[in-house]
Each structure stands twice: as structure tokens, then as C-alpha cells.
Amino acid sequence: MADPPGTLRPWREGDALPPHVSDVWCREPGGPWRFQLMFDDSEGVFWRSRRCAAVTRPISELGTRDSKGIPFLASEVQLFYKAKMPRPRDEVDFAAAWPLLSAPQKTWLRQAIIAAYGPDNLWLTA
Image 1 (cartoon, rainbow, N blue to C red):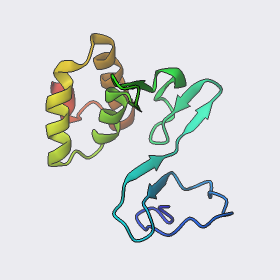
Image 2 (cartoon, helix red, strand yellow):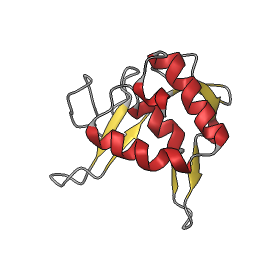
Image 3 (cartoon, rainbow, N blue to C red):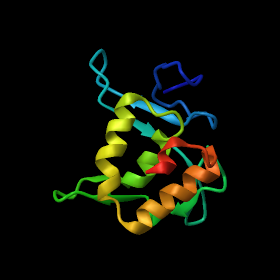
């Protein structure tokens, strides 16, 4: 788990997840990192961003499934996380994903970026 943030330490069997931990990285012992689990807050049936409490969404709309039934985070929500401090690979992801988003997805992403990161975020010019 990332505890403290930016530092990885083993999550031992029986350990409770500390309330301040929001990232758990997973791998076989000694193997390469396979995936990251990110925990966030909710209030009833709504997800609430830890980055900005004003950014919410029904939990039922946080993700979708691919053609094989594999669940994944909704693209606009992933882009919201990436918009805070975009790296070159995030810029590539944004350029590839933006044209594929529906009008409601684009609207949600714009509103979330403004609420969390301000109206001067470069991705708002898209």
C-alpha cells in the first residue's frame, strides 16, 4: 500500500487499511507490479472525489465494461485524475480519448476540472 503517500510498503494479512491510504499496488511476491487499486470516498450512492468534494457522481456511473465484460473506470473519470498535473503520456491519453467521449461525458469532465483544478487548466481549451 502507499503509506505514507509516495512510499510503498507491504500490506500484511490481518492489517486494517489505514483511513488515509487511498492506493494499494498489487503484485505477486517479488514480481512486477500488476495493478493499482485506488480507494475513494462515497456518500450514500454517490462517489465523492478526495481531490475536491464538489466533484461527485453516482457510483453506478463510475465505470463500464468492455466487450468481454471486464469492468473499467469511466474514461472521463480517469481523465479527471490525469488532468491535475498531466504528464506526456496523459496528454496522449487525453488526445486519444477526448474525441470518443459523448457530449455528457465531456460536460462532466469540464465541470469536474473547473471545480477541482480551476478554469485555467489547459485541457479546458479542447
